[in-house]
Length: 139
Image (cartoon, rainbow, N blue to C red; front, top):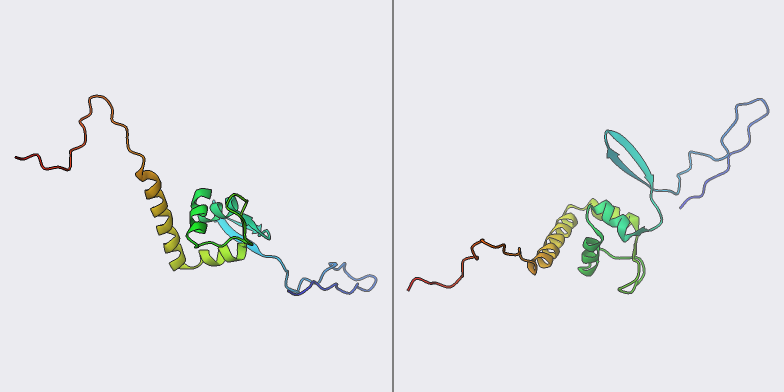
């Protein structure tokens, strides 16, 4: 990572100069997103929480938990199961650009939702016919 260089002061009577040389690369990363016809630049923090990652991946924190469990996302460090997990934003943005990873992520979230919804059945209301049995009653 290069450091910002101080620019030399101008001679008296010359136009004022910025205190930093802008030709040096900035050690900051920006996340560019578009909404309502406007371009938004957002400074990328050093680490993202599960909520930040869920927002970027258009899912909820349960979805991020499933991605970590299936080893599709790796948190920073070695957090225990019940601790807050932080993620490297650069890694998440790189994964978001990978089409095959997006497919794996989507399938993982589909399977997680199927498992979650498998135990819940719609309650039967009065007057509604019971679902057909799977047995053969034509004897």
